[in-house]
Image 1 (cartoon, rainbow, N blue to C red):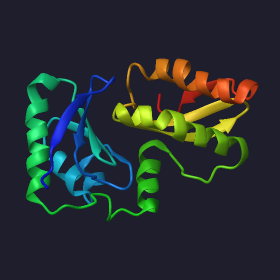
Image 2 (cartoon, helix red, strand yellow; image 1 turned 90 degrees about the vertical axis):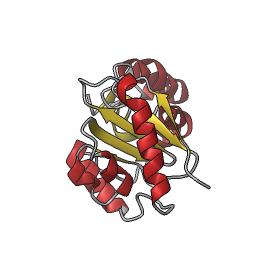
Image 3 (cartoon, helix red, strand yellow; image 1 turned 90 degrees about the horizontal axis):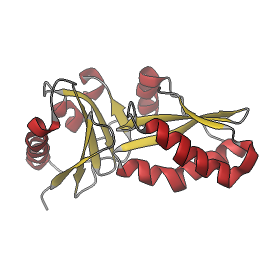
Image 4 (cartoon, rainbow, N blue to C red; image 1 turned 45 degrees about the vertical axis):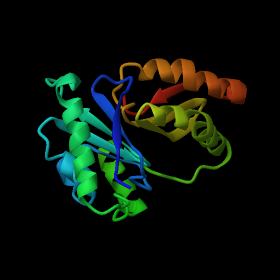
Length: 197
């Protein structure tokens, strides 16, 4: 079965989501330059294009961040065909199989200061709520969310993919995520902020 790709716009005008009919990766990773992409065949190929600024790969989709002076109308179809042709020219693979979790964490740490850790207590409850209720919606928009910390009622999250730098992410944080966490955990939650902004 060949790969088939379709494009979806995201709330972030700089990012387009390209969805595959097959799984592409077993890990989520955001790459902001070609050096980071060397071990990931699809990302490495995408960074050869002059208008690609960033790539986020997760499960069955790729979110591509473009440079500012290019319009999606001019490149979306070309990029969809380029991705489809590349995937169909190579063997079916897990594009993050050569990346172990410590490398993902190191790349993310270099990129955004993200340190993965095992959450306990209230942090674990928040992380579980984010995974259950928020992550699916964020992924449908071409992004990802992870808990960074919970201190003194302040929930700090990391946003990546289409969510990183998205103009509507502040509204999502305040009205969506903060509202849900306050509903589920009450007065323990004062505010939700993004570590990325």
